[in-house]
Image (cartoon, rainbow, N blue to C red; front, side, top):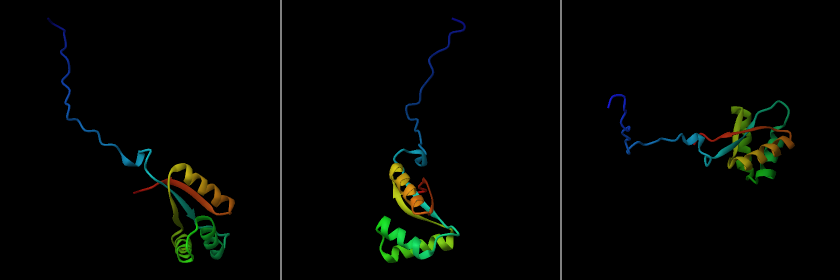
Length: 102
């Protein structure tokens, strides 16, 4: 019979590679950015009081913000990171969230 097309052959070994950066389970991060307004001591205090970081960890993160322009201060699910960003804004800090690189 002319014009009849057979069934396509399907390779059952086809593997699909998913981009982990788009997985709903991939972690998100809260980033605090350097700003020209807040004192370093205040930023350290926010990290201690809100996140419960030790004085040494709060100081380390504050110095990253100051010297590098930003620091990742928390990692977790998107909703939790959205709450952290909102809290940082309430403290007067510049903060954003994004998917984690890891």
